[in-house]
Image (cartoon, rainbow, N blue to C red; front, side, top):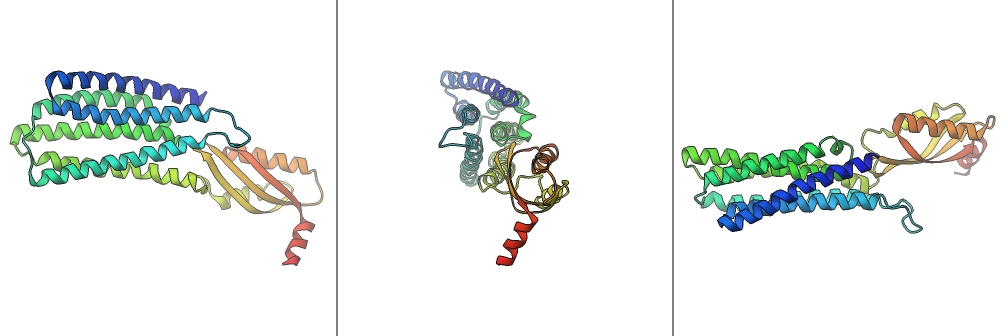
Length: 290
């Protein structure tokens, strides 16, 4: 149900962005406005990011196969990483354009730029409001959200630069504010790229401490020790754990195993659990062998 709601968020954000893109593109050709056509190009990158995220959500719902035994959940992480790297590419383009304008700042139609920026800001705020909420726990949705927010920040910067240029005629404000916007986008997208790589490298998910989980399992009645403990994320909200648990010879092994699984699900939301139970006598034999 949650994945369905996230897909619906992306659909509505994509519809809003798509309608504005076509309206802006038509207006740009009719008025021969380079500012409108440039902003339409920026909006097109948002449409691409939203479309990729929506595609990843749909692919992730496909069932597992004999070759892809975990299913296609990792496509969401790849989409998030791609969107993060695309934001870095946009930042590079912004820096290159700003660098050129530092030495030769061109005359800018400040009023026309501000009108485009205000409309673009309203559209991006509407899309961001739709995506807000789900981006906190899903990397794929966060990537789409950051694309929309970066566009909104760019619109705010264009409005500020337009006001400065209209009132002072200081056209250097355009590249200066563009450079500052690029830094903000780079800072915001860093966590997206870092967290995506973290999932792909199968590191312990954020918010989970390995030693704390070990102590939790060892606190289960019948468990004396835990080793070969591994925890990783298949995607943003699907966690997997494997471990060897040493148990006492007395007691019901099924009860111990159920106790471990129930505890992990309740405390850490870890549902995919593989536990190998070992008796203390076997553990002692393996230790002596070394």
